[in-house]
Image (cartoon, rainbow, N blue to C red; front, side):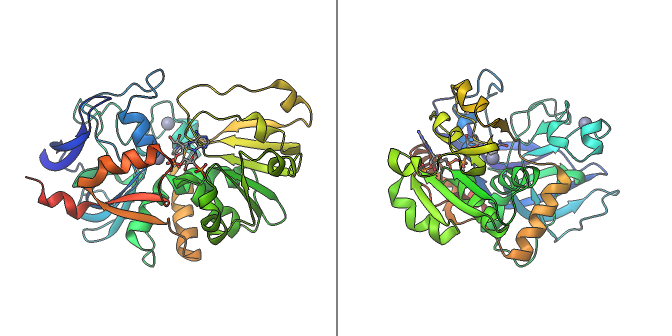
Length: 353
Ligand SMILES: NC(=O)c1ccc[n+]([C@@H]2O[C@H](COP(=O)([O-])OP(=O)(O)OC[C@H]3O[C@@H](n4cnc5c(N)ncnc54)[C@H](OP(=O)(O)O)[C@@H]3O)[C@@H](O)[C@H]2O)c1
Ligand SMILES: [Zn+2]
Ligand SMILES: [Zn+2]
């Protein structure tokens, strides 16, 4: 074992503060990574504040972070894809059983034995997993991805969660040229969804509660922008969408969007608000509409997404911050005030004692 610097939360109400955590020495299949950048996902905020206590209660101290880009410092003897000095990235998953039908189809996110990057049992240490708000991490090669060399590294970090979480459902639901696609919420996930839907050739409509994000939405690739609090603007789109991706982190009226779907249209939830959403059955039965969910993406699709981003030069729009500003960033994230992903420059961790 060896120690790295990190930031952790001691309780649901305490700020993140500097600490030291232990990492395992690399086993034969492991890649040891020095973390250069880590994105701040709204899931980090939900988890740190224990907002998902019913399903995934937070174990403290909690070290969040699952949008990790770094440089390989050491590899185990059996590692084939990476060598010291390579760029590498890690997302939300660090382990799965490797033998179930989900794993066999590279849908590891649905493996009954999946291990998330933080706040999950760590079979190596006997404790819990600690995420990317830290100087380094050791991860099984199966869950480490190549980063296309042309991408800005800070902008690439959010691809590991915000990117794959929006890319995967768009492929599953067949977003292509000629489809009318809605994206709800222009945050970290939402702005990646707009970029992907645009790159896939769809007609993209962005729904926002923040009128001051309109210009940005057009610049990011939206064809139309609707302020969702304006009922007349919403009504113009009734029964017209093939697919809507809902990336809202807080309580909101899903029925307002269900009624915008055409026959057999689908709305997929990727946002995970703390409280359940109410669904009016009439909005589903008229038009045979469907409501579904999607969880990040598997290993093969994550590498495919990164390669797609390399080819199309797609990265997140980021506000790079030193880790000492993380609590202020959380405050702003809770108010939907981010353009459009905070990313921690992990070099800032070096100045901590
Ligand atoms: N399914 C998965 O695998 C997965 C993966 C990652 C994250 N998530 C979840 O996805 C959600 C979004 O994450 P994120 O990192 O993109 O968050 P984010 O950057 O904070 O963006 C959320 C956006 O939702 C909108 N919003 C916030 N409060 C709202 C309200 N009360 N009513 C309506 N709209 C509101 C805002 O957009 P506007 O200002 O444009 O309205 C905000 O920018 C979180 O719940 C997160 O936990 C799920
Ligand atoms: Zn995330
Ligand atoms: Zn499995």
